[in-house]
Picture (cartoon, each protein chain N blue to C red):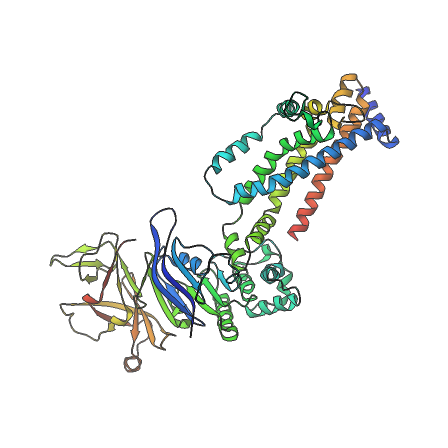
Amino acid sequence: MSNILELRQVSHAYNGPFVLRIPHLEIREGSITGLSGPNGSGKTTLLKLMSFMEKCRSGEICFRGRPAQPFASEVRSRVSLLTQEPYLLKRSVFDNIAYGLRLRGEKNGLAGDVSGALELVGLPASFAGRQWFELSGGEAQRVALAARLALKPACLLLDEPTASVDAQSAGKIRQAIMLARREWGTTLVIASHNRYWLHGICDRLLFLHNGLLLDGGLENVLYGPWQDCQDGRSAKRLADDQLVYLPARPMPDGSAAISAEEIVFWGSGPAGEGSNQLQGVIRGIFLENTAGKLCAQVLCGDQLFLVNLADDLLQKNKWLPGQQVTLRFPVTSITLLPPG
Amino acid sequence: MDFIVQGFIRAIELLLQGDGETYSAISVTIRTSLYSMGASLFIGIPFGYLLGFFAFPGRRAIRMVVDTLLALPTVFIGLLVYAFLSQRGPLGDWGMLFTIKGIAIGQTILALPVVIALTASAVEGLDRSLRLTLMSLGASRKALFLSSLWEARFGILAAAVTASGRVLTEVGISMMVGGNIKWHTRTITTAIALETNKGQFAMGIALGLVLLAMAFAVNFSLSFLRRRGMG
């Protein structure tokens, strides 16, 4: 499978320090890539650059092997971005969806294309006659998605597509983009805070922190303040006074990350010298799409940890949401991250 | 009080009888306004778009100058245009002093800051996501410009209404640059000023009513367009 997008030595800034540095990133044709990371980590900036909405400060972004720029004819209407709060043009729903098709010079069969796009996002064809101000937030989001799907883009980038919609709309959006991938081979890049959503549909997960792309597994991030313990070690104190010991003292504004792979459910017994052992409650168990693995979200104090579960262990221990569990992971498995 | 009532009755008679002098002033006013509004919208909308859409060095300073020009007195514009178009002026060879085109130039200068400033404000007020949305749907640079203008259409309509209000009701430019020449450059406002000085209230009132009707017509058509645009 070839690359649809490739970033080479890309960095970007907004009148100040760099907000994004990506030495190299490839997005495979037809894949679904998830982008996670805290607020301000650079997810939206990365999406804007990859969708050619903005020009990167340095480096180059290739579309199907060739460097491309914003407004270039080879990327216009082939790469599309759905922003977190999509803007609808001050026109009817029909005109909003038909806008991109008209730009492409498609004049015939517009009515069919528009109603087809509406159907994709679970809205009736009668919606086409509505004005932009007659829609709810969820409907507006789905109409905005329909306007992009009508173009049958080769690559669709979505920024928090389900953040401000109800469960029903979220479900319809998910169905629509999966259909786009299945029917037209659309490559999807999705930024979201919703781990269930990302783990459920993505082939690959990327983690952004302070504008740096980290290895895909660092799903759990701890933020300061940090504490110096009496034994000389540094730790993060959780809301219920449990301590997470760190391999060294992080920088004051830095953070720490732990891969879900490194955390295990621990039956009983004292924590070893080099291990962290935390009591928590299972908040949810779900199936990760990437490798078909089971994952659990465990709340320890005020910190939510994502943990990979072995299938046979789950069967054996009959873990269920709401159950008290003990997590264990080596102190050395924690990666200290620099401040932004 | 009687002379006002008499004036109104006579005004209606003048309009109904198709009084040549009255209709000449109306015709001159319509022509000068059309020329000046056409020119100011043609120049002012793109300039206002640039000022409102793009961030560039000196933008604030230009904006401040344009905003200051909103309060430009019509007699001062009349004076400047007169100085440029008079025989001794740099544009004296054009022979446009005391012509309808001369008045239109002055009125364009009057309307231009209004169109630019209000268009810039309308474009500035557009949602920041509009650019991303248009680009996401495959807009070229030209389509981005035209579609952004269309999104700001209600603000631009307001700019056009405000500018036409200033142009229709100004006296200073028409008087100084046009010279208030009967059958030639006499506009509604200069005619009202002259006839009132002469004690001829009827024609003044008749022309005043026409001016009011024109202002109403402009506002009504734009309000109709706005309602249509809202769907």
